[in-house]
Each structure stands twice: as structure tokens, then as C-alpha cells.
Length: 127
Image (cartoon, rainbow, N blue to C red; front, side):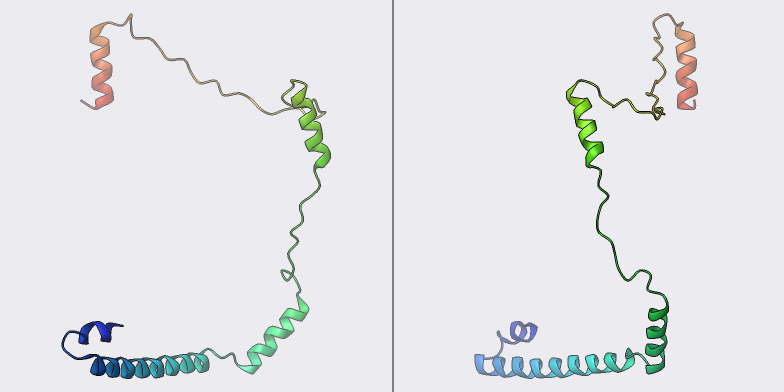
């Protein structure tokens, strides 16, 4: 594509087409050679393949994945039943460890002296 773009302005369509064909043949041959070299380099050795096959026979762990989810239909029905009755959570034998967040109240600065406010601002700004 680049060969076509660079030579279309200076040459006619016949010469441009011929140069594009040459570029295609050269890049195809280079890609084929690189692919063949990588196949030879990355080809596993027979002893390594046999060792891998023996290890796979001994330890079948991780070969199968169970995609099923546990059935929690009864718990969901119970939760929906309690939510429709106005209860947020069902009463169960397990005590709830949930504690609502209780942030500290903001302190009003209406009754503070101006000198104390200036001192607090200087402290916060590092001045």
C-alpha cells in the first residue's frame, strides 16, 4: 500500500502496479521465512512433550471447570417474602453484625471568638 502511495505521483499505473507486485512478493516471502523460523525455534522437544504428558496423567487438577452455581432459591424466596411484608431482613437464628455508620456531628462556630477562629485557620493552613 505504501509502495502504491509513494510511486503513484512519479510513475504511471503500469510501473506502479509492477512495483506493488514486487513488494507483495518480497514481503510475502519474508513473512513466510519468519513464520518457518519461529515454528522451528518454538517447536517443543519430544522429551519435554513426553514429560508434560506424564505430568498431565498424574495430576488432573485444573483440567475441568465447574460453572454451576449453588441453588439458593429457598433463601431468595424467603428474602422476597420478608421484603414484601415490610421487613427488610428475615429474622434468623444468626445475630446480625451490622452496625450503622454514626459519623461525628459537625460543630458550629457561631459562639467562637474571632481570635480562636484565626488560630485554627493558621493551624490548618500551616501558617
